[in-house]
Length: 184
Image 1 (tube, rainbow, N blue to C red):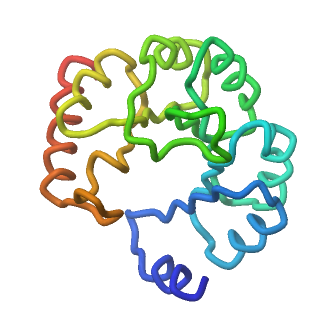
Image 2 (cartoon, rainbow, N blue to C red; image 1 turned 120 degrees about the vertical axis):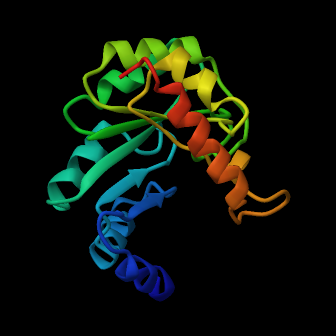
């Protein structure tokens, strides 16, 4: 926690700290968010472990912080889950998910982009697309889904590591910007 607080404290505008919480322990999320003071509190626990009521409670308890909720994209039910966070979450992050996992994402696999596109069209909340996105497919993903933004973890990491490969990050950013030509 001390190291995270030091890192968060060193971030300068216009950059913003986004704190990803994979736990469903609301008290712990609240405590750590108060210590870190991130601009964005990102809830990544599976929806059966942390529901809309929990998210709304956190939003009330953490004024001034934006709330981003990961939504598992697995089937038609994902659209219903996304709708349940309307008016609660400031952002929805659509990501791949395995039913047996307690958190959403970080799998390095894509999901059904047609479901993601339907979510983008169905909700008013800005949608961030994630799930197996890398420099090779982000342009196609943006054109197919039309999200407000994109996110990459696994496909921009160094092989066998959780550290970023800066060349992959640069190529990802370049491809993402290229995809927006004609969409804006």
